[in-house]
Amino acid sequence: MVTAVEIIQVFNPPLLEAYYQLRFEVLRKPWHQTFDSTMDSTESISHHFIGLLNNQVVATGRLEPIKEKVFQVRSMAVHPQYQRQGIGEQMLEYLEKFSLAKGMLKIELDARENALNFYKKCGYATTEKSYLLFNEIQHFKMEKWL
Image 1: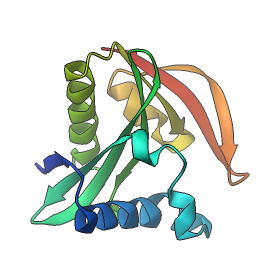
Image 2 (image 1 turned 135 degrees about the horizontal axis):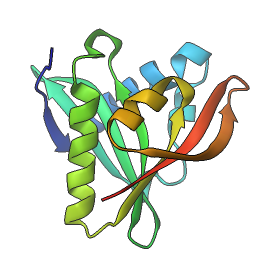
Image 3 (image 1 turned 60 degrees about the vertical axis):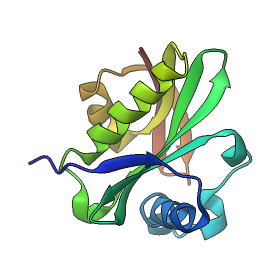
Image 4 (image 1 turned 90 degrees about the vertical axis):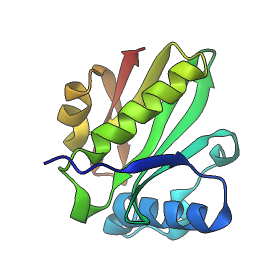
């Protein structure tokens, strides 16, 4: 089943607050991390996106410029209640279209091991083993030429 969401770039404080809250709930809280660990030094140069369903933030995605003509996808998260409904694919497709419109040639990302098949299904190729987050979540570098 595919649940259609509205994806928008986020600028205003109330939506940014909901965006960071979902990132925290999905990507940090299950590993007993602090809310502050959700953010890093590249937030201000990144493009932030949310997926909305019935005015509720159900997905997040972020594009960080890392090299000339290359964005990195970061902070992809889908609310647990809405996972496996095609929302992640919609977010990723939107991020790819946005990247193309900005003149990017490639997208890179560091995928958690449990998300490898998702990204492979979306056309990303694994390039190498990456870092170990919280001493337990293996990541892998992946890329896709646009």
